[in-house]
Length: 587
Image (cartoon, rainbow, N blue to C red; front, side, top):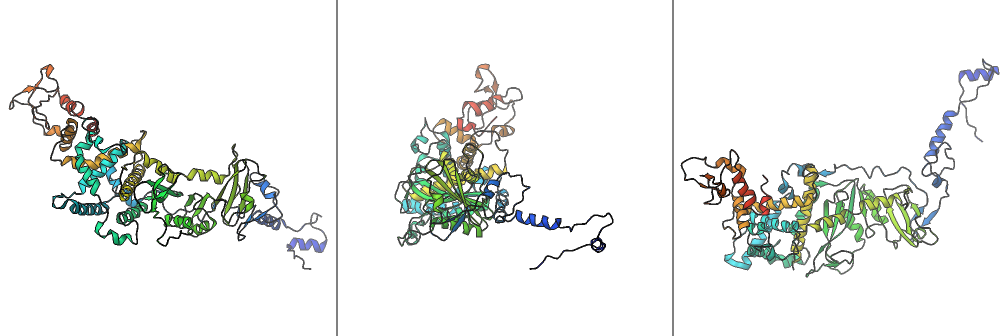
């Protein structure tokens, strides 16, 4: 048997030799340092039988004293433990974000106003493709009589679609928007109803003559060119926060489409399914992918959920991915950890990696939780009410933390509920002021979705760059969309050659052709005796005469009252201007 060697000091040696020390007391060997080192080691060994008795017993003390159990998965290839394998809390390496959340420097350097924030996602390179293909289709349909549209026409058309969404008129008949009595003056002031119908009919996103060849290998051929260019720009403009949500969206469409799906849980039920990755806090759409049905082989794709999440999160590092039970699996968690990403999500009860002990609800009380751990994954089975359980899997939670609230929900479920709605919130917000209109062509339905998401992303970028914009106002996004729509239609209104017949629309066109009244006052001639003076058109009962004529309406004299042009400003801001015109000039 080997004995442990003890180290003595010079004084101790003398004591051993002489039999006593100077004070006549024995000196014991110093082993306090060795004991303290052993105690420090046992604090970090969960399997050690010796524990530090000086702990205060808060938090997880009862769980440490409970006997450890093991659970075997249904497949028999995975062994779960009832005690945590890692007591370090949240995974530090996987949750280290290298990118700063918010607008990128590329986006911030290119945003000057609301219109420029929208053009981050629909630049002239994408609009140029739409213009080229639309004019090509126009020549094919109308021949030599076709008048090519330009960038101003296309932007005005997009602006009218956005304004129709602002007014909640996307389901309203197009003819009623141009009605002389009940319609909106800004629609008639921008373009005629016939021109709007023509653009809606012939707008295209690819060459129709070569589509049949490309269709053989790509079901999205009719819009693939601009879709890919648009998706590439989404991650360039905004960095998501630490929490990212991956889920499915449904673009409502009931026309003919080879990859149309039926999702009864969605409000529209029928449409085109889109996989999306969104920032859980702002719902910024960071990545998207269209689901195009089964492959040409006819066989269903295996591990589709894992493939989708890996595709949607390409380029992310240090983020936590929240997903639903269609995506969550033990294999997905392992793959995400290799990319320095973590995961939390609900799990389907038929997954082979689950232990039967956590799936069963027999003998378990309501509001109880049961945990299972591996080196990298954590499972929790929570009973919200009798005979019903919810199972979640996480690679970011490392302990069996449970809240002290009435429902005693595990912390894992609370984090999941907090971050699961990123994509659903995007659907709700874009659906409130959507620009989609009834169409029988699925590429147009996807184009309307592009406009909705681009406008929402532009709003997120704009408010992040300028947090003081309309601060304290309600319905800020509605104000943003209204300003965006007007900015897009203004260039076409300013160059219109024919004045609309309705007074409100005609007044709007005239006002947009000339500078604002306050800015135009400097160009007005001074009062003098060179012109014949006539009564003011606004305050004639007061018998005030003036030689000044309105700068946009002939034969109307408007007087200056003192030093301030009250009659001139009143005429152009209150009397002969529609409500939509008042939006442009606030005096």
